[in-house]
Length: 442
Image 1 (cartoon, rainbow, N blue to C red):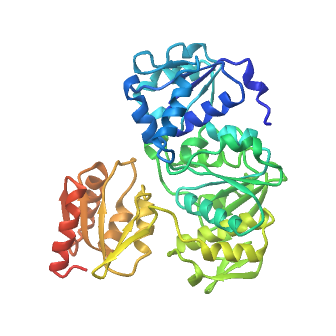
Image 2: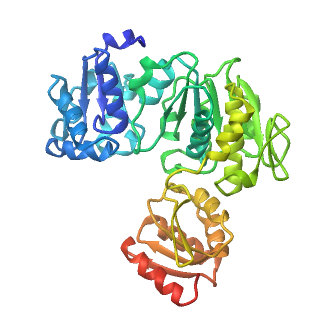
Image 3: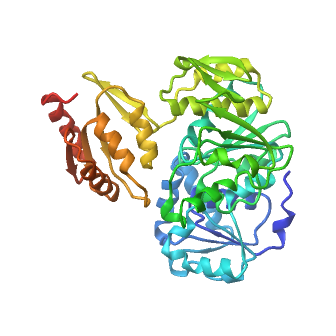
């Protein structure tokens, strides 16, 4: 059993306990007999069950109700909206979720952190307490796909592993730390927001790339890059950093990393690289790029990174080949939904930056109808607008900040050939697409 003696005499507060990260920490501590904590959520108490169900869709309604009732009836101090953050100034440790600083309700927390109260999160708990080597993936693009590729490879090996992703479709695995063995692996996908508080590094750290992203949450690009470096900042000589030598930002880290660096590249020979049509690992052929079920050069790079990480972890060449060939992609990441009347419909909702959408568009050779919208992140949409102008036949903009930014960039690029429609609701996209087909737009 993992040693939690550090927490036993501490006054612990958990903020956002209804969410995936907050509840995972809460249940983990409670299961280990630690009850000296207070939990907070700024939702109204009468809406708690609905909110908990929304965040934990991977459990049945019955299971959600049972888990929440356990907390509410345990005698733990629970503060909802009316008393949110009550007594937090008396905490020794405050656990927060990855986006805690984005909410105005958490203004008090900034003051408490400045006063020296220790802040912690779920990712640190994984890195600190996992009894087995941790393989952690970050990057502006590709971290989800790379992490899942690693899992696909491990599925074909004899190595037992656990996966902690960054989506709401599967539960976290803090509750599995006790059953993990030294020869297992824990694969963790780590976001920029989680890295803001990282105090320990994984045994194998992968950085897929660095593009401008989340600049609304950082002073500038340099601050964002420094945050990404936290993944490797605490590594030692016996650890490994899997880095993209093609990326102008990541390639500069070679003199800053204390661990053993392994490089992957699409452009040059490296520890793993692309040679004509072949993915190469340690100068041996892995698979042809046509063997990958996912398209695009970015996915070839992801496959190279995943292969190198698994090679370092001791997985055989044969198992790496098999895992790559069987990987079929990530839900909502250029995922084929259906094909009707010669038109293929793809879901790419995980593309939340101009760079990721640009890469997705560049994966197609056929004419594209693009539906997009969403919240802006203080990013530059110029390059995306150029690709939209080149590749997209019909652009459907949902009313949003992102749509306004894209429209501005397209107007500056003086794009003449694009058909653009602005709508308020996504429900209107289907008839628009049908109308476009009648007019000869594929």
